Image (cartoon, rainbow, N blue to C red; front, side):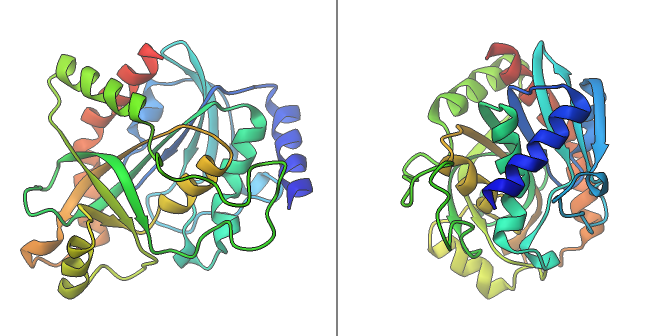
Amino acid sequence: MLKQIQNTASFILDQTGFKPEIGIILGSGLGSLTNQIDIQTSIEYKDIPGFPVSTVEGHRGQLIFGILEGKRIAVMQGRFHYYEGYTPQQVVFPVRVMKLLGIEKLFVSNAAGGVNPDFEVGDLMVITDQINLIPNPLIGQNIAELGPRFPDMSEAYDQQLRQLASMIADKEGIALKYGVYVGGTGPTYETPAEYRYYRAIGGDAAGMSTTPEVIAARHMGIPVFGISVITNVGLAGKKATHEEVQREGNKAAEKMTRLVKGIIREL
């Protein structure tokens, strides 16, 4: 696996000549950030050796390289999910590659169902911690060159980046929520009983991604900032659809874009 990661990173570097400082994984309906980037080059996933291909509607499937607020960034426009049939190791493969390309920080975003009864559709939730219910991507032989066998997860999401987000939000007049993200396998949306369970074990929002990528990033020592757009409220008893998730994600994208740009500007 390490050789494959190295070969893919070498291929991308040969194709682009670009060494990013920051990696960003965009979630459902949150692609508008790309409109703010001075794009230098991009590669479709299907043209990258070893990369899976996203099969989810609304996920473009390309790796974008460019400049945002003076920083060199690599953006995944479209991510991979366990429910698509990929192994957890395949899901986190791009994060491994971005580490070898040079990223020093990772930003992750997603659309999530609100579990906290105080949350409303359209809220932005800064992720303070996570509960992973997806098979752990570190299961199997450890790649010692990337990280330790038993990585510490006491600070899955970087405290300094969260504090910076709060400062930027105050300046920009953006209301933020804070909470724990529960990552489940999907692809079904949660039952009412599952939402109650997630709340009982400490969750504030739930989705079908993110936690594996964060585990891989922390395994490699990369600080992570995560944010969820609350696209439906699970405990309200309303049915969720993929179209609704995309619609509400698009509505909140402008706020998220301003927040992420502000954080990157201050780094």
